Image (cartoon, rainbow, N blue to C red):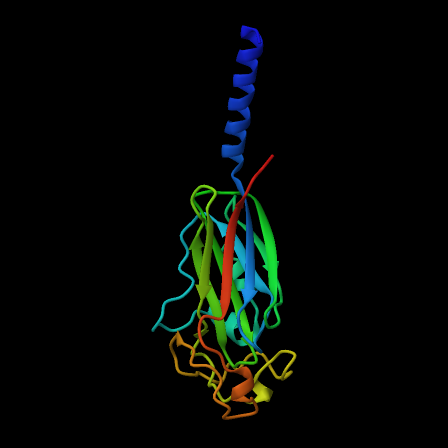
Length: 215
């Protein structure tokens, strides 16, 4: 190998490395339903850089969380992610034991992945979390708990629960619920739902984030 060939090879290597760094990295995000009977509405999965606080335990739910928890409408949460490098995809919906995978191209390596979805059949149960991307080529696995938005009373009546199991109305603006976000205690069988079939123990969802090789 002559000096020119050697120099060209080094220059090309540096160019590709620089381009890969500038363009970000490729990540595979897999979400898995860990419950025996719960159904997840289409899951918002966002790749973003800025820090986002989706909710605070013990505090009243935002309208965005309320829309997600009562009707599976994640559009308001998705609207938060409007930066130049932000990207929002949809995974699922997920039935019991199912998994769904989305891939983000050119994601910021110092960024995060955010997740949001509703659990059915429930009045206002949801999952939502922001997760730092794994360092290097490591794979990160995170388990998500179910939360209660506190915006609708947990009467477990199908007329107040949307989705394939009940087919009721998605939103109850006249019902103020408990008034704050808390850990969901599952289904108790006080209305139309069978507790032995639909209740769960946390966690309810597994999220696996894997850095993919680019060739």
